[in-house]
Length: 424
Image 1 (cartoon, helix red, strand yellow):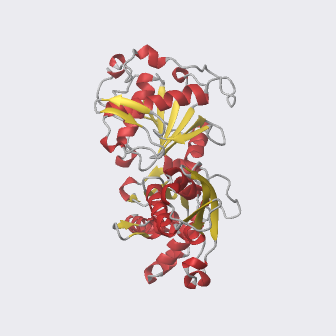
Image 2 (cartoon, rainbow, N blue to C red; image 1 turned 45 degrees about the horizontal axis):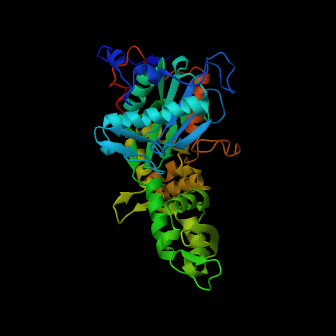
Image 3 (cartoon, rainbow, N blue to C red; image 1 turned 60 degrees about the horizontal axis):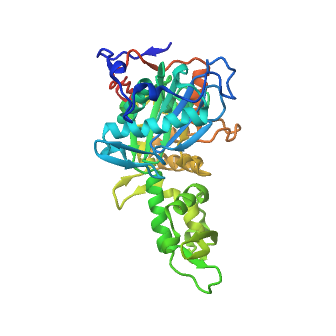
């Protein structure tokens, strides 16, 4: 059954809501698409638009589809002016903790308006929207999304789904531990009977941002750069741009089990991966050590002791200790690893291996260690990318008419939104 969210304050929000860009509300209502204009729809206008909004990435598409039609960086290439002045987006996203609400609304409106008009070719006024929200998504962003969708774009209904629940749906499970490894950090979310157990959620700051910082630091120390035609190597210097660091982090890293030969092998004995890069002084080869590619994932699992950051394994153990004793076996037998960081090849299997080894270190956890496994069947293979699982699960939930928490346009007061971490 669908739950309907009804805030306590009366709804005078829509009648007074003006465009945060300083133009009349009617201007914000205009879109270039029309009902049924999607190539993936049946033309009936019944398909909902599904948005997956994380701390770094936004995905959008239509319910019933197997993958999103749009994927981009949240606030990556947009700018907005609010009470605190002009705020420019960044390729790696922005930190919204120091952004006022008006500027945040501007950024959300700019991006969602483009998503609807240019990528989905849909009329927002005729489409209901399902929002799949990440575990670490700030409530301020959720409020801004609701204000823009219901107030500016005039969406008739917004349905919120927790990403942990929808991620498990892609495995056909309603119970399990969801490890959401995002850009700003990682969250361990226990789910039982399709409900998030918010009191037992744990988190770790080890995410994609920390990983990119570590790659940049290691490349500055151990990386090599040689200009084409030169006879000797030189320091990495300006060749290591933020775009190159992001490429190394997203495309070159993988998680591999450590062998006995790796323990005794010196850093200089490892092979190198060579990348042709352009710099302001010319072209050259950037050499990435193989050990950096295959061993970096250990930082995420073990944590960073220099900054007192606990790892993902510690967050998992903390969550297992918190949940009720009679649910531990059920939850650890269905571990779903999602998020952008989880797209790293071999990461999910290494996380399960390290968790199993951690449990076996104490005698009281030996029986529980035998139950640890991934949520998907071993013979099923990698059907979906870990980063797409929450969106795909929300697409399945909407198409199957599995209810979430609804916020209707006429009932929204501009502030109150459902928060599953506090039991709605």
